[in-house]
Image (cartoon, rainbow, N blue to C red; front, side, top):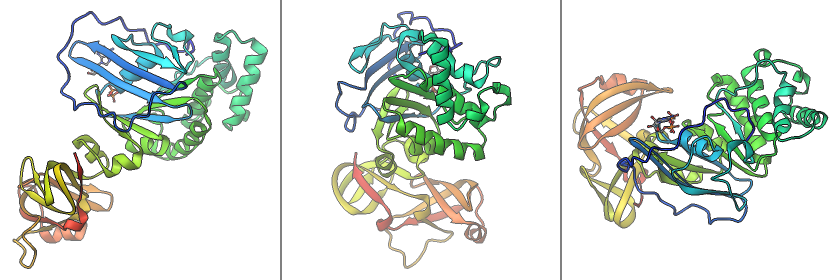
Length: 381
Ligand SMILES: Nc1ncnc2c1ncn2[C@@H]1O[C@H](COP(=O)(O)OP(=O)(O)OP(=O)(O)O)[C@@H](O)[C@H]1O
């Protein structure tokens, strides 16, 4: 990476070994095989009360998103890749070269920080030229390279502009150009769209997707926005409590979430249980009837829109997938009302505003909830 990072390097861990975090075990099922080119890393970072232990592999050209809740360890993993946080254990190979003992400034790594960290006193052009200059590229060549990158980013007309006069989206592209101008073999992006308002975000997301698709080496981005992750990345690596809990294509993960966090992210009710035929007996709660036939440990999932609520026990509805619940919360969710329920099983249900008004729902209201077997989806756990 370049010298553009003002964050101090962290001190190595003091040798205390905290208890392992209570994360789910790592699932390597969909991780690619180690490749000679690309990224092959196991990042272990110990801190008092926190342990990161994440295996990351990516082929050249692949865009991987690290997704997870606050405090999961995403930024720590990114900083470990950049060399800003030392590894307690593990390894970091890029295109077959071990980098774990290489100082950050000597790594072929480009970083786009969340707040971009552009030099306020330098023009856009000089901000971008700074990276190659730090690598020993001559001034004229560095500026020519920077100009080409600005052009590619659609910023040719802003070469002389200082960062404070750039819009959020333009600043983001300058930061990306600055990282790419160093010709990195690993591009790291920390919440690349977080600093933008919703409208700019939409445009910048599309532009960033294009640039990442054209980038021939590995990109790793950190986000807690599922949409950013799904749009930008080829593969999602979900981190919780310092561990990888699931990885796969966005479509795989959306279809087969394996943790509550991921299920909420993709808007599904998710339960774990044991399947026998068309029934999944939940670990905590009743049985759910499904169309799929399975046996053994299983997940069962369905969207909140598949749930129908009644004030009185419905007659004429089969007793299967009929549960007694109580409303714990209501919130507007797009043009629907999302009801959170507890009772036979915890549930989220989506209703139209009219239906919510007719049912006169409020916290504490007892209801009957039902879901059709055809709208549930069961898969092995
Ligand atoms: N410099 C630091 N020194 C000590 N502990 C830290 C430091 N930075 C982060 N932590 C702790 O390490 C853990 C992982 O934090 P990290 O910032 O990597 O998570 P994250 O997934 O990036 O979260 P967020 O989405 O909130 O940025 C947390 O428990 C956090 O409090």
